[in-house]
Length: 133
Image (cartoon, rainbow, N blue to C red; front, side, top):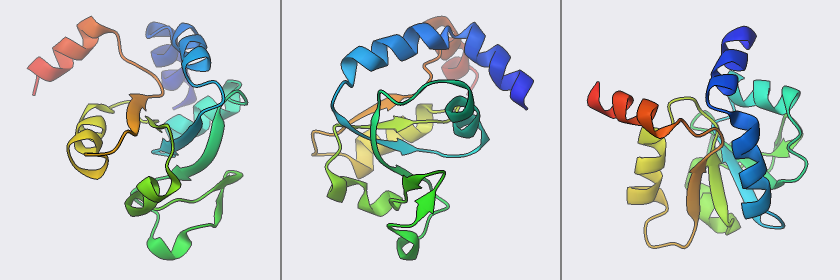
């Protein structure tokens, strides 16, 4: 898996995008959503210390796990994200489009909370993905 993630991140010019995030998110509260193997690879191979990560969220976390620890971050159940009033939610999955869409149309609707992918796919690849549905 690690080699696949490495190739994917190189293909999408992740480090360049990460530098843009660094400027955009400086001193802003962030929640990471989707903390599976892709996020863990990024965490272990890139410096994310510039992010003010107030917690991590994932569909697998239940309400009873709120406040617990995962990878050194506070667990925030998906249903409670808005309670933490982050500037944005960084979606840390390779296939982030449906999650971002769901958050913007449902969970984060009528809030000022933004949603960004942690690793953005180039526009041409994004168009191909949407057309293949």
